[in-house]
Image (cartoon, rainbow, N blue to C red):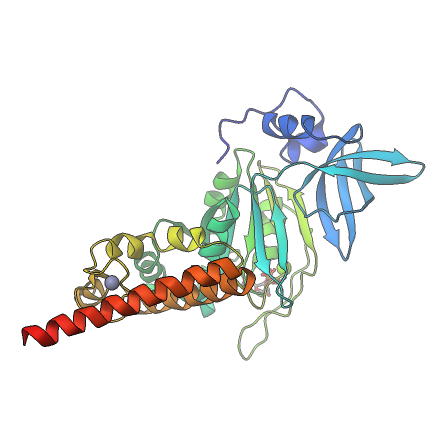
Length: 351
Ligand SMILES: Nc1nc2c(ncn2[C@@H]2O[C@H](COP(=O)(O)OP(=O)(O)OP(=O)(O)O)[C@@H](O)[C@H]2O)c(=O)[nH]1
Ligand SMILES: [Mg+2]
Ligand SMILES: [Zn+2]
């Protein structure tokens, strides 16, 4: 978080409202680019919109920046050209269907994971928490549509997740909206992440104090959204902070290196320290502390299953990309297999 970054002396109102502070000033001072600093507020099929001190303009760039990027630009006739992108302090990424890493938002401090109460998927929230931690920003779970929540839903989610705050919200009753505004106020940039129809744009409109973003009813049968938002859009929140609305994502393939997984499942990773085997896979091996926690009811078996699923997905992606990691992974598997064979041999000898 960036509470210690003081607002800059630069009095330019449009950029100050979009998160300009001493940190941004320093990052921009280090790059080689034109005289007009700005923030990318919208990216749409290669084209981007950049907010400068004198307003928002379409811009051309050789390397397409991500929404939230701070850039240096110069004017060339009527055109605005992006010369350089400032180094990012965080970036939210996913793997696109072609397997490439796609940047969903840059320079964010908070990832607001929106999970609709009327079709809550804790496994999806866990996956999003991994992606959020991988970005370098802090995750915050917003359970939306709490006017439709079944009793006990939030308590259950609190028990299941670890190390992340949860705010119950509703744009119908107004529940939780002030708490979300408080989280944004100290000049933070937050990105809304979640499935289509979760109510991201509806919540953003309330925080923005105006209906700036389109919203549509969910489908009556399965309550899924209709993919209303199609561009990523960065907006200044009048009560403080900056919000990026994003299109609801169908899938969210992991693109990180495993650190996000370790953070999101810190409870399981801590328990694993107590497993008898250092390479325990928590899959019913003897002396497994994770399995023991499931057996006592302290840990949700579905959380452990999801942890395994995400870990397998990540292992697969890492090995696909990197032959050295592939060799390493094979070595680890061999050690694990040898250790378990040894265990069973020892046991057979004892009996
Ligand atoms: N009951 C209830 N409905 C809500 C709430 N918030 C939003 N909705 C409704 O949910 C539907 C979808 O909301 P959107 O804001 O368009 O959802 P979105 O997450 O932006 O969806 P995409 O843009 O498709 O990703 C709309 O009909 C909203 O009126 C809420 O708190 N309670
Ligand atoms: Mg939307
Ligand atoms: Zn174990």
